[in-house]
Length: 365
Image (cartoon, rainbow, N blue to C red; front, side, top):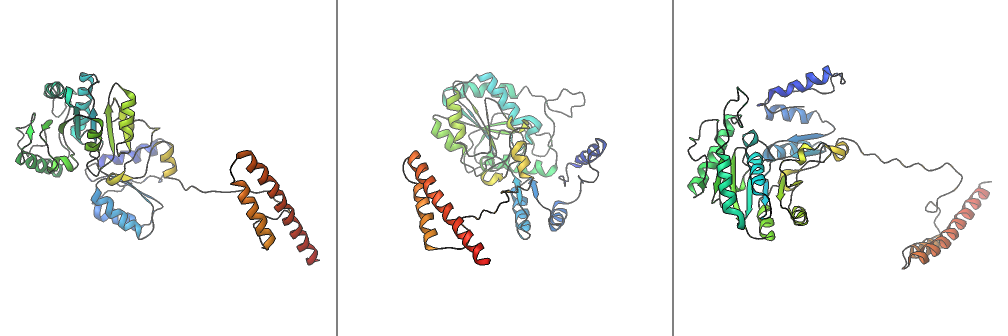
């Protein structure tokens, strides 16, 4: 197991497993630069590779693994939409949007990155969203009272600054957090309006506290908007009408959908988790996760007898006719007639095969 270089405390996992009595040496934590260590790990030709990270690295791992035909599962980036219809409780949906977008300072692949609100409640929702976002506290959390903290790495701060600068240059309106200097790691929560498709913030994954907000008027429109980017990891649909919510959820290209909640599917250990399109492929967690990390082997057991199979040699023109009659009978219209005809032709075939086998034994004598 190789964690990201920015998360060295993952090594505690190995220590805790050993303390719990897990098989010693079965889980090994390896540290180092991703490019060098990752390539070396693939060269060891493991039975399976499971990767969580960026598209760029995921593609490289696939390329290296293909040389050895190593199966790969990838969980890559997301551009997760939250869809809010006009029959929802606004206060609850706002609270969910704020937590979904800004928890861990937006550093989650399933955080809310695009917020679509029905036009009939858009203005009220937006004002409530701004008001509640401004109430968030941000700091080092020494006393345990901070809502959000800082961005983990300087490279990610630079990435956020690039996306923010591009959005401002192209006319986006920052309703909160507009005074961020572009350098401090304490990136403030930003609610952003007027985002267009040509902006980086609309098309790229935002691994920070950035929340573009859009309005929509119909189900079909919001489904098309939600499916616009090439990602498909997670989503949420908010509506009092659960039939409508389910209908929309089924039409979103994504691996996970929460209805009337956010970032909830990944918290349920029994549910499979993974993405589609450029968010990766494969599923882990739950029953599907067990199968993902197992070799599915089929074993068929037949009884030991003297009986010969009808499809075995020798082949004769009569056996072919009997097989043909049986096939036509089994697939003929009418359930009962096909069963009866199939049974008759099956018995004829069985009888003929028995005669062939007996004839073969007599010839051997």
